[in-house]
Length: 397
Image (cartoon, rainbow, N blue to C red; front, side, top):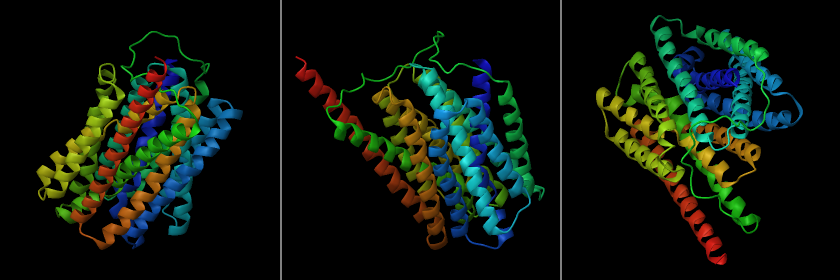
């Protein structure tokens, strides 16, 4: 079990690295190819399209093949993509490699999350929070490494480091063995939520599921936009150097990592609903504050607060959705991962287009509006589930 968990953490660490890779080197990459932020948004779109393609492929393979083959293949897809990117091919072939990279990232996240949801009943939030810590550590490490490589004019070797780590994981999975049955080991349990609602008919059930998917769609879109364009926003809005601008993503992920380190403690004491409501509201407040900041120091502090607020929205929403629809773990997890890919595809493309045409402060207001919609969708889910539970209790009296 421990080998499986540590190898899974390694895969999520790799997922974190790939999620911010292009954003960390975006200014240098666009300068090398002599292209615009719209083209940069297109690269993020292509990676997310690869992510979307990878979800149904992985879900299908999980029904037919051994987990070791699936996870090894996911790591090797990243190896192939990063090796090709290392040579900085022409822009069209680069786009193809970006798609392959997205497929690999999608496969590793879909498979690992699905297996964890099945293995650790009642402790899903705790173990998902640990996976998200690993993801955050990867997302934090990449901008730090990229900023150092940028400073010494060796940014183009970033893919080499990612490829070597992915290759190491592909080898590690050959020595991992586990039975994919629900774990009976004792351990701390989630505080959870109210009992899963009893849905009458398919329409209410799948309407609520769609709202969960829209929340993931918007949240991942916002996070992906921040990963990809925060350094560029800093460069244009605060007029900071590329080095300090790149570090803005590191500040964001330091905060994300700090937040995720305490989620395992929080979810044993606070329900999923309360945590999500508080996190979304805090994120909304700090995005608003970011629109008002013009100095480097206060902007870093605001980004840190934003990272804390957003630290576990994705993982707790996934667990909350699985709690709401028991017995549908693979379906729910795969659907959430797919919508995460769609959000990660569409939002950065839109934000990249906006970066070429609007002021950075105006772009931040666009992100704020989407965050407000995120809050509205969550409140609809929260009150709808309360109504459904109350109707069931009333009918049972």
